[in-house]
Structure formats: structure tokens, C-alpha cells
Image (tube, rainbow, N blue to C red; front, side, top):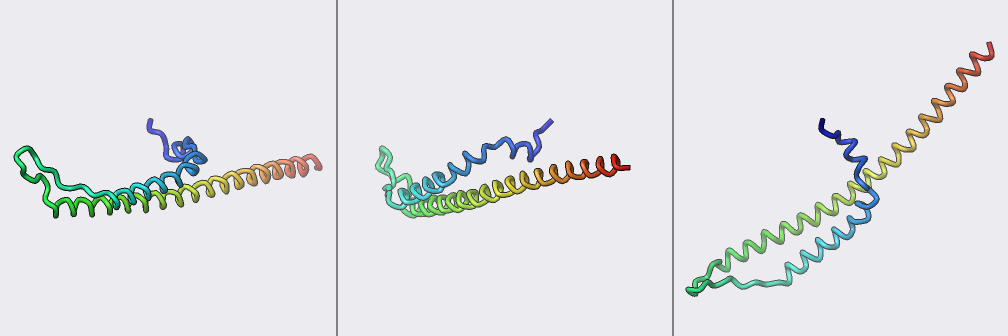
Amino acid sequence: MPIGWLTALKLVPWGDVIEATPQAVKAARALLQRRRETSTEPTVDAKGDVRITADMLKQWRQEQEAALETMEQLATTQMALIKEIERLRQRQRQTTWITVILALGLIMLSLWLLGGN
């Protein structure tokens, strides 16, 4: 039987994920910066022929840069999402405790009313 989404989310160590997210964003930014600074010339095979044209290489670099920027945006979005999930988990815990306390109060009130008659 497949594991449910809620069960899977409960198994994730959210504290560790939240702590690691800023490092992921930082690493993505560093990778993007390194990519901008590095320049690679087209390779030449044994015959002296160029394997990749300069236009092809330029296009590839642009695609890589766009992909890295996208990864950075996704990491930032993930960080915000994880923080929101953690906030919702805390709120759910509070709601659970309030429900338990109210249920106990209702039980005690019912016992008091029934015992008083």
C-alpha cells in the first residue's frame, strides 16, 4: 500500500531541511557566479576541426545560466514553502491541544452535570 502524502510529510525532518535551505540557495548563487566568470573555448579534435561553434557555445552558456537562475529561484521558493509548512505544523499542534483540552472540559462538564442529578 502506498504511503500517504501526509504521512510522508510527517516523516521529513523539517528542522534539518529548514537549516539546509539557506546553504542550498547560497550554493546555487555561487554556482551561478562561477559560471559567469568561467569561459571555455571550443574544443578542437585531432584533425584540427572545431567540434562546437562559438554560437553554439554561447547559446549553451545562456541556457546554462538560465537554468542556474531557475534553480536559484526554485531554491528560494522552496525555502519559503518549507517555512510556511513548518508554521502550519505548529498551528496544527496548537489546534490539537486546544481540541483535547476542550474535549476534556466537555467530558468533565458532562460528568459533573450527570453526577449532580
